[in-house]
Length: 248
Image (cartoon, rainbow, N blue to C red; front, side):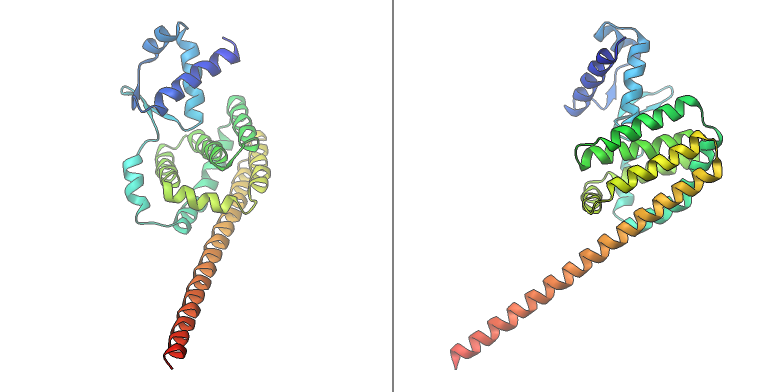
C-alpha cells in the first residue's frame, strides 16, 4: 500500500480515538475489513500511531488509546515535581540509550531518524512534545528491559498531565528546541555506530541540559512570583498612605 493510503488509515484511526468513541480499538482483522485492506497495512498504520504515543498494545488483550499506566501516572503527578522527574530520567535514560545502542538494528535507526525529523519539523510546542516523547519512548522500548520501560511509561504519563504540559511549554518557549534537535541527532549517531558508551553520554548531556532549563524556568517563575508579591505589597502601602492622607 502507498504511503498516502497508510496515512489515510492512520488519520481515520486518530479521528476515532480523538472523538472518544472508543478506548480500545477493534482487532486488526476487523479494522482490515472496515478499510478493505490487508492486515499488514493495518499493522503499519498502528505502528505509526504507537510511535506517536497515541496507542499501546498488550498481548492477548488488544490495542488501547492513550498511554499505559495513565491512572497511576495521574496519581504520581500530584506528589512529585519537574526536578524529581528529571533526576529519575537522568539516572535511567542514559542506561536505556546504552542498551538500545548495544541492541540496535537498521530498522530501529530508521525509526529514530523518522521520529527525530518529525520533531525537528514540528509546527508548534504540542507537536514537538508528541514527537519528543515518541523519540525517548522508542529508545526505552529498544533497550529490551521491560522494567525500565515500564518506569519510563509512568514518567511519560506524568509528563503528559495537563499542568506538566503547560510547564513544559514554558520551558520550550525559552528557545530550547533547536538544541534538543542537535542533541537527538548526537544520540542517533551514537546508536547508529553501535557505540553504547557514546549513546549513554549523549543522552546524559541531553538530559542534564534539560534539567538546567527546568531549573532556569523554576527560578524565573519564582522571581516573577516574588516581584508580583512585592508589587502587590507596594500597592497596598500606597493605598494605606493615600487613605491616611485623605483622612488627615
